[in-house]
Length: 179
Image (tube, rainbow, N blue to C red; front, side):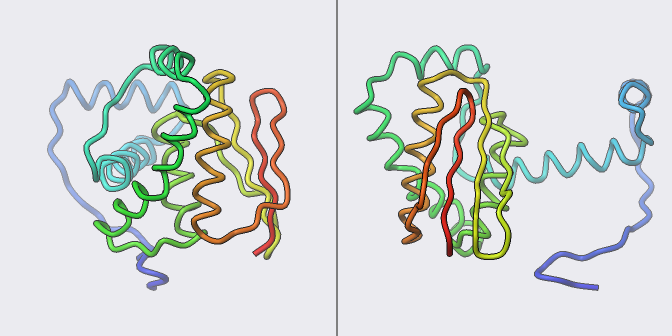
């Protein structure tokens, strides 16, 4: 069955994996209380998603401690200037991948991926229907929260979305709007 480009079901494959990697995978699966197949599928999905979504353009991986220290050194005007570039970067990534620049695609292919695989934040859309409530939670510091609010605001505004409310509470940023 095919639905919006996604094929459901499974396919049996036989792979040769070095014993050293196999042993590591088995230990990790036991530690996570997962079947080995589920762990391998999760790892493959994460790597494919990361490579396709994040590494489409050159990217730098930095520890969250170092990243937080860098962000803390930036002025508010620096944060605003950098955040304004967000929509253009996402548009460029989406054009390369043939993805439409829509709210749904941004949530599914950018917010979710950056949260899961880059550690920027945890992301959820707790709204229903046309009412959206985007929640971003992070542990990367107050300046990062400030940047995140600016970054997401610029993205939503680039989609011509009128934000009804923005709320920062500790390490959580919440956006509410209707489409």
